[in-house]
Amino acid sequence: MKVLVACEHSGRVREALRARGHDAWSCDLVKSDDNSKYHIQNNVINLLDPFEQWDMMIAFPPCTYLCNSGVRWLKDNSERRAKMHYAAMLFRNLLECPVPKIAIENPIPHKYAVERIGRKYDQIIQPWMFGEDASKATCLWLKNLPKLEPTKIIRRKRYANQTPSGQNKLGPSADRARLRGITYQGIADAMADQWG
Image (cartoon, rainbow, N blue to C red; front, top):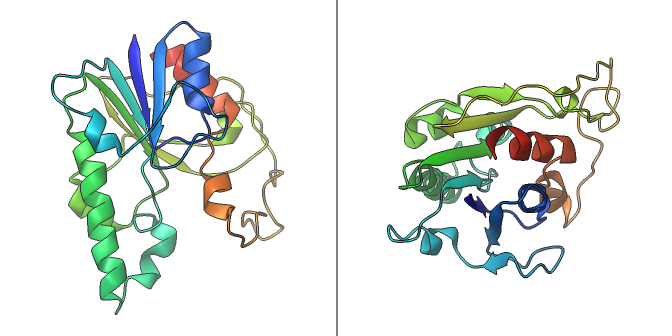
């Protein structure tokens, strides 16, 4: 199967799919972390030409302006609202592109994002459902793909990535968004096994 892994710089999902024999390619505006020859540094929209034959796309579009945790910053900030609108339109373009099977991953969105995207997510997953000692609610919007089934559930009062108050331990830094955006290996493997 020919698979486009959109907005992925880590290569984790791409490599999980390639390990299972698929012709998987990642695409992002930045270089891949692993300098893979199977990464295309470009705007993903340029790869969604109707004549390009992708069988499946798994996309991880930027969430900064769409996630519920940032909704309070929209009030009285027209620049941020404009960026939210642009991010939602990119998301919607990915969701409606002519690829037979699509999965789009993002954190829980705020209501303004859902309005612009056009529909709510199909599923919420957690890394701890896939053998990872971590908590991070993640939504999936699916087109012609089944919901991901948990592979190895780990139950904890507090996961390794959390502070006592439940927040993510990763403090502010220039790399924070990039590091938080890397897909957990257990989820990447489940995507490759169950959708590939």
